[in-house]
Image (cartoon, rainbow, N blue to C red):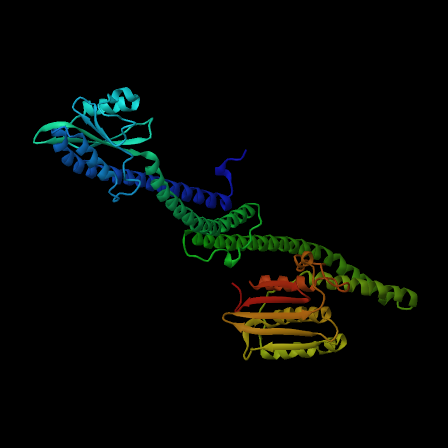
Length: 483
């Protein structure tokens, strides 16, 4: 069985809060009920003491002259005066003389005159023993545990002469009836308090606990490598829990940035390794390839009369030249000094791509804020723009639009291309800048590889994104020659 301490905070906080409210309400109600009972009993004893003191002074002359009839009239008058309520009015009044015998009683059938009260049972015997052992000049009250009566004893004494004891007997049932009426009112108030506080406690408990549970689940997902942002409306307060949500969001951003950085580093290392391998292979291929082209040229000069041989040589030569172009594309190097990139280069690119845009039935829009030459090698920037824009034109839908942005932003040159068309799958986007990887059936897939090589050699950055039928490439190149 699950321990209550192992429950979710969604249940634990409201339940413990409700338990605390119920226990507190019960404790306060019990305390108030005990106080109410003591107050009712205190009122009864106070009223009985007042009545006993008055009767004791009135009965002293009658007992002094042994006038039983006068004493009887005095007691009857006190019981039928009509002042006290039924709770405060005694059910029995009797007077014991100095020998603890009945001198007068309001109920002669129950306690006849001169009767030895000790013979009337354990209750009266204990009463007489209490009066005898604790005799004094003050009014006292006695409540026996096994019996349902409260006794108030008042000594009948004047100028030091003790004649007897006046005893008023009150029923506990009448006392409890008054107490119950007060207790029921108190219980009703307690239920009203519970009806108000318990829903409020449940509402605020869940309002606090549910965000904590969501935060806990998110942290568990984060530990398993599935970090995600929480909704802003989960918790909007600025207390400690709100600060915990803020700390979680900062941690998610940090982990996501670190993951992107790690992926970028892995990608850069992979591309660098591929570049080194490709360059090495290209150099190894170029040497025998150059020899083969020279041999074919010599063969053409020496055997120029055989048309069939010349046709075969031409076909082989075209194939070798294609291989040579591909190998040279893998040997991108940005060394040597060239002129700076200028506004005229933008116009040249627009004109050079005009034929391709007409062929593909695509509209090309170039937005540039280049007004003067910028310290970047024109040849390399032109090649980047040509490759990216040409790819965008060829990948765009018929009657589509290709946008190219060339802006200077601070100390960087921003190159951005955007085109519609088929969305590139994410698994292809991750490998776009690798050689012989492309999203089109035609082409050798080296254009983006060349662009990546130039950008990295210029200490720049390049990124690709394809969503909802829109593909974007963004290049940032720092102005000036790289160190």
